[in-house]
Image (cartoon, rainbow, N blue to C red):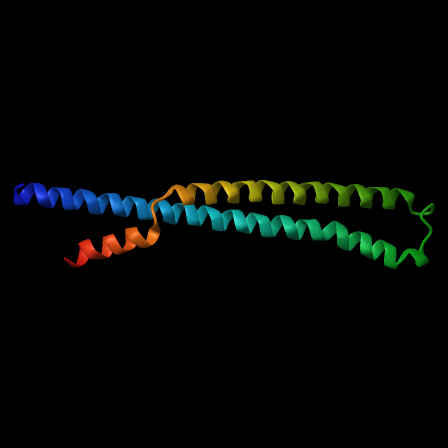
Length: 122
């Protein structure tokens, strides 16, 4: 092999490693995004629980028959928030599992990093 072809092979190999590392970083960034979506979904799920807790705690101060329209609308909003939060949690968990499966298919990161460092310091 000539020197030029070795240099070309080495540059191609380094480019492949850089591309693999960039792909892994992208997968990890997407996972962080899905974890933030999960956090938001859990936060939205807590709102209906808080509303129902307030309704139960203050039930001695009102009669349901007097505020039935307000009560029904509040329960409808709580149900809607529960559905939205549940959807966010479910979809983010599904996406996180997909990211994990994709990440497992990538080469071992420590092997890639050590190989990258060895080629850069030679």
